[in-house]
Image (tube, rainbow, N blue to C red; front, side, top):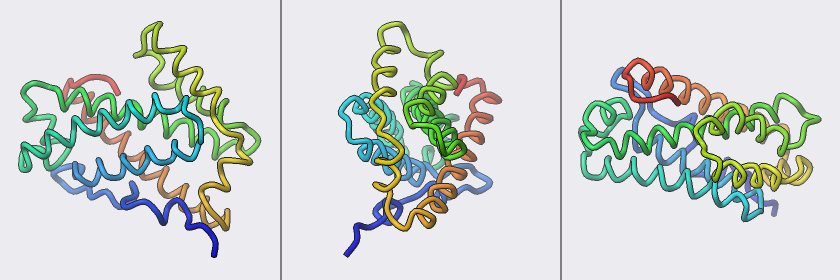
Length: 195
């Protein structure tokens, strides 16, 4: 019996996140983001724990707000409007930055089949998180980028057959990119910060 594909093991994909006229469902978004963190587990290198911890910590801030404000926090948009102390807003901002980094790195790699993950994720980092990191944090992230697995090691860990897995990865990645882009616009128009 073969190992299940990564996308069969996650409880919620970005393709399943509910979006309606009120906005992006917070609980769905958090669950899909928690599942994204598991991808870095497949990298098999402790250097990526910095990325995983950053994402997980920010998801926790958004989840805590939702727990205490189930109505006001039911969508990301309503959370932004009602979050008085801005702790959840800041957590969401950094979570979106981390998701943007991940989506840029993966997109670069999927679109360039000859490029190694370390090169793709370095470009993703430079196009997202780098400008918000101080001189103490940048080297930690660059070290993590160097710790990326080889393509030949990583993609088979997502499962087999590869054509089916790549189709699911493409749908998941496109949905992630769409959500990040949407929230980028919400943050910009509401003056909540730059994603």
